[in-house]
Amino acid sequence: MRLRILDTGHRLPQRLALAAMRLVGRTDPDPVAKLALYRPEFFGRSWMHFIEAVMRGPSEWSDAERELMAAFVSRLNECPFCVGIHECTTTMLSGSSMDADRLERWREADFESRIVAMFELLEKVTLSPKAVGPSDMAPLLEAGLSRSAIADGLNVCFLFNTVNRLANAFDFRWKSEADRIKLARGLIRIRYHVPEFVLR
Image (cartoon, rainbow, N blue to C red):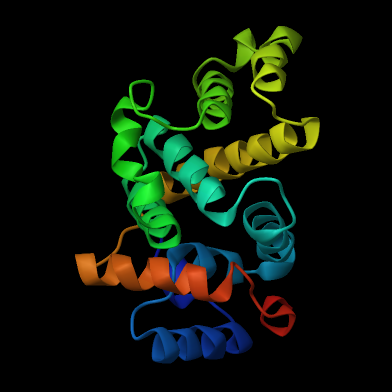
């Protein structure tokens, strides 16, 4: 259900920021940004800091690999908005080397073994969380992943298990294919960073 207040209920500083985003990006601002800027002191400030750290902070995973994980988890959660955006960002960042279209049959695709091992855990955490245990770490370590890389992958999983639910609950969508591409390009350009003064 789309809440009108998330489109029109922002305070003046946030309204001005959204207007600037609309002008610079030549499309409506990302619905996630609109949500974050509504009462940012309650939710958006800490949330946007977390998103930036998870998706663009220091990590053994590349930006494109984290975008691929975002698309993967979003597919598991059947979130059309996030699937569309993050498959697009994956393709833009990686070219043909990490084709997100292969996610539909990821076990049969030729992804690197460390990505497949991470996908196995992300799928289990997302779809069967009660079944996850310490033994699930062994295949990832055997695939050459460090503990910090595993933690970073799980952070992407946590992030999108939350964002997917918000996107589906609030009916996030893009207006057209051109709009989807603009939103994806915008994320790549700003690297998930929202200026601090906007989040006050």
